[in-house]
Length: 296
Image 1 (cartoon, helix red, strand yellow):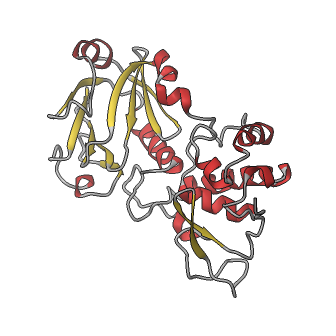
Image 2 (cartoon, rainbow, N blue to C red):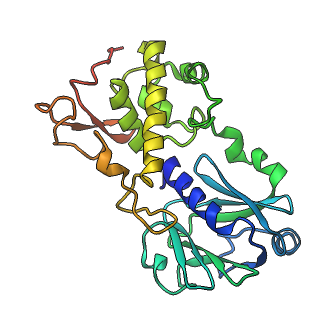
């Protein structure tokens, strides 16, 4: 599943391509679960409306319409958004199957949005776990998912004080489990957890209660730094994810520990990165850098 920087990269690409376009039609292709919307609402609030914004909340893409409705899109494991204009220019984002470059619609296409200029936006999803939902914009914050998800780590308004207050609610758990909890913080996945914990020199198995506030503040700074770098590099999962121009993300070229088991630690060349299991996830650590572990 894409992580926050990948979804942010998709949003930034689509924002350049589709804002201002008027929707001529929208339909599912034999996949009502992918487009679970009331036909009359599609006709009245989607068709004929123009796109005024493309934004993100956690790992969800939000396409706002002039009609005061929003298309809420979750790519899940194998989702794609592919834009094709009338000049045969093509921009793909998502799981890298042949659908990114092949003729569309194809057998993975679930939803087709046609614009008034005859350009198209295709939602493809091999495994059919993703979805495109049409909701009043005012109701989006009331979605069950939105009610539960924590604050955005990259928002300027989210301070170290806020982070420490929220993370302390999970004092009894491991720090890795706490930052992976989407109700604590939005969008931190396995890659960025490992990278930020290494940067903050915290062992992932350390209980939250055993970590001083100063080190938690450093951890938040590391989370922000690795996510911003990943967005700059176009995302992290360069094996199975591409950005809005079909380019693979390059952040993994700069990863310090993730998927580097058996390779030297960047700060201790004589020490090899190890892969352990924490919070039910494969976890990459340097046992020299990350010694802040208190047995309880």
